[in-house]
Image (cartoon, rainbow, N blue to C red; front, top):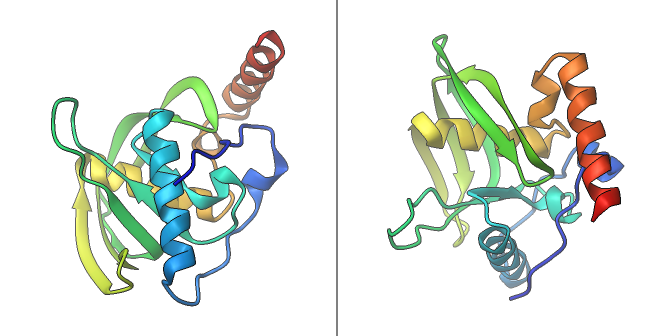
Length: 169
């Protein structure tokens, strides 16, 4: 396992649409292991492969609270089958947009299909933070960042702030 570099805005790779995965094999599991280690080190609760420069439809996530045992989850080729009409606001942040947080409105509940770490097909419902996180990470697979859901002014301010922080570092 290895910690990989997380790409940050305005890196153009983050706008790339990720390709579906043909099969879950040892090479893909090694990628998911690296992604998980990278996410924990950041620290974050979700990471899409494109955030480390790999344009594949792969997400890792761990929504365990501080003090709880780790609960890693793996999503290969995730797709939303259904989304509720009811929406819910949530203050989001992103490892690719460091230190920027803002409220995003998303469907409150979704039903999704994906393959897990073993390559088994799974269908399940998501709500609460799970629904927010899976939608946020799935946006990455389509080249969409959470700041793309904000007004143009807020988005430009966020990118400007990240660039300024990078210069100062």
